[in-house]
Amino acid sequence: MFRTVLVANRAEIARRVFRACRTLGIRPVAVYSEADRDAPHVSEADDAYPIGGAAARESYLNIEAILDAARRAKADAIHPGYGFLSENADFADACARAGFVFIGPGAEAIRAMGDKTEARRLMKAAGVPVLPGSEAAVTDVAAARRLAEATGFPVMLKATAGGGGIGMARVETSAALERAFAAAFRRSQAAFGVGALYVERWLDRPRHVEVQVFGDGTGHVAHLHERECSVQRRHQKLVEESPAPDLPPATKAGLLAAAVAGARAIGYVNAGTLEFLVDGSGAFYFLEMNTRLQVEHPVTEVVTGVDLVVSQLRAAAGQRPEWMQDDIVPRGAAIEGRVYAEDPAKSFLPSPGTVERLAVPSGPGIRVDSGIEVGSVVTVHYDPLLMKVIAHGATRAEAIDRLRAALTGCVIEGVKTTLPFLGRVLAHDGFRRGAVDTQMVERGAFNG
Amino acid sequence: MAEEIKAHITGVVFQIAAKTGDAIAVGDPVIVLESMKMEIPVEAPRAGTVTEIRVEEGQTVQEGETVAVIE
Image (cartoon, rainbow over all chains, first blue to last red; front, side, top):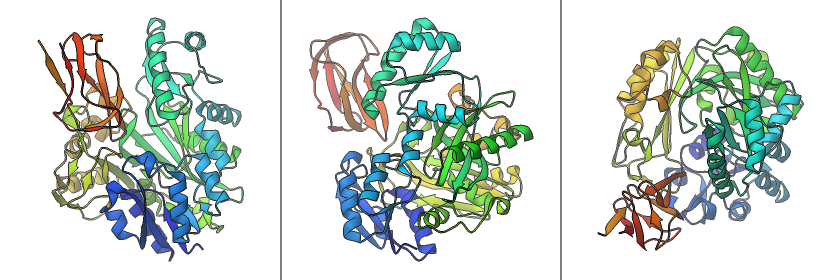
């Protein structure tokens, strides 16, 4: 097993990975930007190295600075967390060249799934259903129009290098295509350095259901069941749960089998997630694969009892997981609410500031993964996730009620947060019945 | 009459979308701020001509700070 692991991330996920390291007797090492000098993840690590300026490209995206810190820390391996460099194949390659184990899949799998049209092609070849649309990337509006007309409006335009909803646009009509194409192309070029887009059929009120997979490195790929993540704004999740409520058994079985087949087809190793849209008939379509740990991994950990980060570390160190597919038996239901420094009353605009008062919830079945403490400065430079509150119950209703109670006891002053919004979701009749879809937030279903 | 356009949130200037002398319509983006991985346009409150851009790309602006002037 590794002696020292450098965690190339910040906030709650850095602290989460430290905990797993300590479980295995590994010494966790932090890195930090100038803005994070006093952050909790820095004081909590055994050792911490500065890697540059506040802007992410100067620090948490700075491959050379991170590798240099790993050398100074005498690290054996690097855990990328999520976001930042976690799905950067060049970083995975650079770690290997510098003699560090990259805790995640191979660079080839990251590269293949990071190219969203290539991912569609590979999944289709593996028998995984994909939405009608592009076979290849499109770089001009005429090609996009031909595809969109063949697919049928409305369509989604998406960035081939995409993620996080950037460079995505819904297009209603052929007349609206030119302007939307130009805007999406420009945004994609600015964010990813590649403008190329692809076209997919738009679905009305689909659910977002994803499957956690894990490749042990010996050719075996297991699944750890599904997560329902339909409550989203701007294609970013706010509430996640497992199991997905009221999923038809045939749909669930199909999703799990497709996810395992897709991951196996690309020789996937370590933790990953295949995301799908499920339509009203129960049919499902591959959206994309995230070749890393997900933000919402705790709901899977809570229902299965598997520590996914410990499993990642063990697999990266060449050890077999302590569990097999047959050992994975979900127990009860788990639900997570993401507490962001955003103002739900102002269409989720960022709300930077200083945390002046903080009461962290607790109680039976409650887990909190937090990145803040009193005095933490929430800056404009990074993702506004403050903490995740996860509740476990014997039933979905109990998990929801426990999360509601926990969030009522959660106090964060100094920044606006999504706490009041989460309270309205958990009290919403449709949500409680399990009638969820990815367009609910934008339709205003939870407006107070 | 000159009118100052103020940032409605704190952020880093990601892009300057208009330049001095540009005629702009109500709702046109004048600058684009980046905050917490989101791009947020600061839009013209009315039609006019840009007479001054007071910020540079990469600069941090506070909520309420004047970023441009239109006439």
